[in-house]
Amino acid sequence: MATAFSGDETAPFFGFLGAAAALVFSCMGAAYGTAKSGVGVASMGVMRPELVMKSIVPVVMAGVLGIYGLIIAVIISTGINPKAKSYYLFDGYAHLSSGLACGLAGLSAGMAIGIVGDAGVRANAQQPKLFVGMILILIFAEALALYGLIVGIILSSRAGQSRAD
Image 1 (cartoon, rainbow, N blue to C red):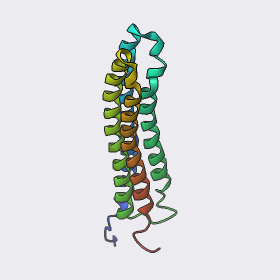
Image 2: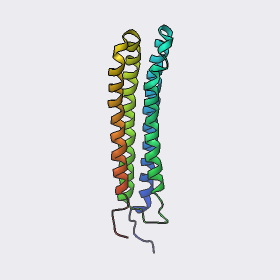
Image 3: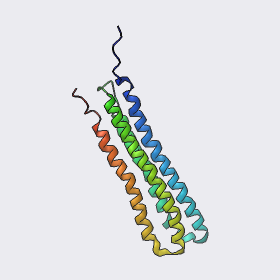
Image 4: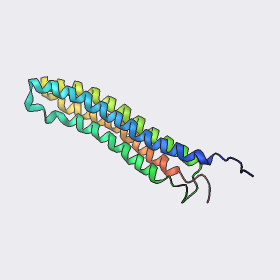
């Protein structure tokens, strides 16, 4: 006789979906931020080639966003082992929400970094006093992804607390 379906057989699907979402969305943000600010650096470098290395800051900050997604994806994927410990839907949803929080925060931060980086390096070429302001805006944009990383870690740590085994 077949046992009743408890829904827990599908729980790892949601966990792995969260890991994929964290990495994919964060890398999309990193790619957009790198590409958009890289275009600004390239166009600015035609007029002021001596400022290219100084203007590479937005590209580096955008690249860090992918690392945030990688961290959450590794945390989630190491927490999914149904053979070692029961993995319930609560755990899968906790990992899914963790991945989405980090990934979507990384995507939005990458968009902000790309737009600010593009306009900022072009403006910095014309007026060097704008550099500090541009860096501050980039830091606040990067902080958005850091908030997603922190919330993702907290949500991921909730997995495994649904039932006492």
